[in-house]
Length: 145
Image 1: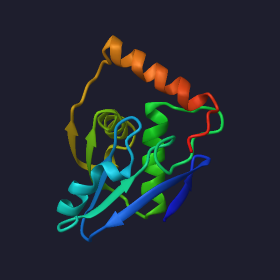
Image 2: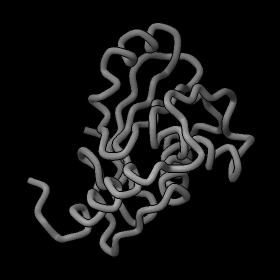
Image 3: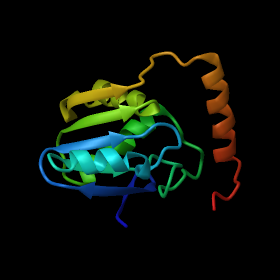
Image 4: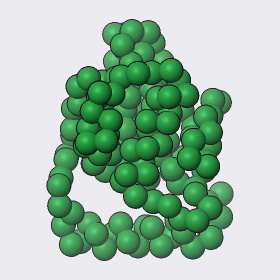
């Protein structure tokens, strides 16, 4: 199981196939397994990279809580650096679309094309409440195992 060290955490990732890199960026708490069907489909044409965002799946949670869209985007850029990927195509779902949008703002030369599935620019109140509750659980010190 491959990991890279980035921004003081170990990020879990997998690569499948060959060709132009395509990163699949998950939403809040989604892990790399979420993309299994698309990974099989797209790996026929691309080098597909799936990974777990900080605090999800097999990727470590930050010791001090550090969760922000900007940090998720920096983690993604650091993963690309570790894999020697200068630029890539992206598909994101839900919060993954926010991460890709942040990458477009901060690292536009690294994003060839982006497909945003279920994007939003402003979070509805109920979604903010749910995110707040999930963040409290993630940062409460409860063992995820």
